[in-house]
Image (cartoon, rainbow, N blue to C red):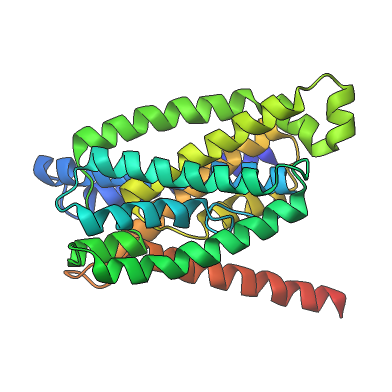
Length: 307
């Protein structure tokens, strides 16, 4: 199953990449303009999927994701808050602020749960509360911001529109390093899946493994927010869909989840650029629409099975 799924996903992602790069205009200039956006889409999709996989394992909740646990919205709020005092922020500043916001959100979650030994229920509830607060505060702060341009609004909804080649190459390098680190932790993730007692008895340093995985999830979320904005649902859909393929071993689950996330984001970004050409939709809106339809479909199938 894993091998077949990988082949299909690679084919779909490759087709999306080809369509994105050429789009009926295979000139060198068009290629140079589209390559950065493609790299953003692939890295953001795969990164958010990896973050979702980690959080779902950590919280023992198949509906956990960076946007539901507050990591995405904390990063967005930090960037928007800085926009009240700063104008014309560079992308390096945006990345720093986004990582700071996501990490702060993570630290708040851990601090509020410091006496609960990483209870999945308490962590999930804390994440939902953090999301509610930050997602409510963001539009209020944005109204006070000096930057209320169309680009800023597109970024809030999620877009690859601001991609540049130097930033895209840097993002790709960082993403590859983080993805390699995640894949190298597959044994630890398999042990965590068995439960705390089993993991400890089999020699896993529980606190160190949890902290490393949470920091990776925070880094993936912060980078994605900085470069493509508030993309939601990919971190929820990709790991969920990978498990529906019957995968449970993280040695296979991690690469399939990354491919699913990249594939979803590439096709969403391509659709955003072409559906209403010459106008462009925020890719994040299309991903959210797809996410809603995906879970309505799952509920519909579940209801039929129960009957």
